[in-house]
Image 1 (cartoon, one colour):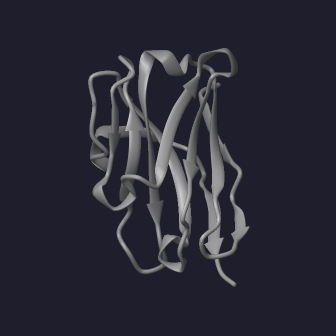
Image 2 (image 1 turned 180 degrees about the horizontal axis):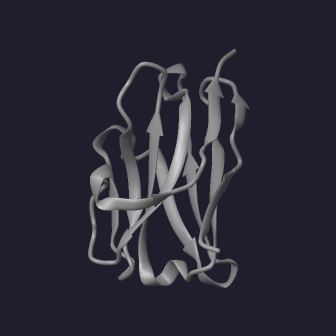
Length: 123
């Protein structure tokens, strides 16, 4: 069964950091591009970062310098480490799968999604 499961969300204080994990089952992450997206209440889903099948990495402008995406092939997991979190980063964070040729976080190019993990930045 093909599945993507996100974990690592929670409540963090402003200025804090968090590491989100996306674990796959039923397929090998190495064969696909895996992207991270987020959606805040009342807002459109937006891209955060992705790592392609060829290990090309893309970050959306608003997280450059604050995010690190990485793949652990042995664990079939992609992680997203976020630093300098602010209340504006509060959202549900999703990981998704696309063809290994995809190198940007265009949501319509990602065809399989996890259920999401909530990140809340609050003092």
